[in-house]
Image 1 (cartoon, rainbow, N blue to C red):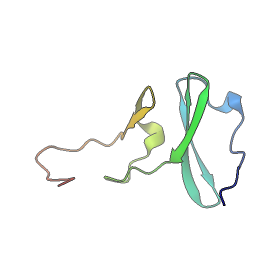
Image 2: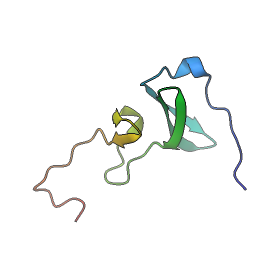
Image 3: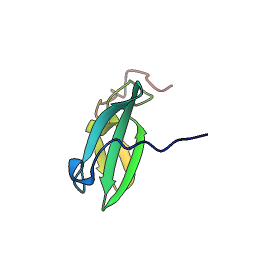
Length: 75
């Protein structure tokens, strides 16, 4: 069963910002999108980049580590 863990206070992540936390050995990215908080794993699946440092547009985050289109990554 999932459990609820307190990882930050609302003042720790202002609107439009993200922050990274390590809780019980897990890297977590916490996002404040217009007062709604979202928590996801902080590691991007394509190259391991920190999603908490990525570009956030609405409820979509883009990994901060670019992929070179001729590198064949993701194929």
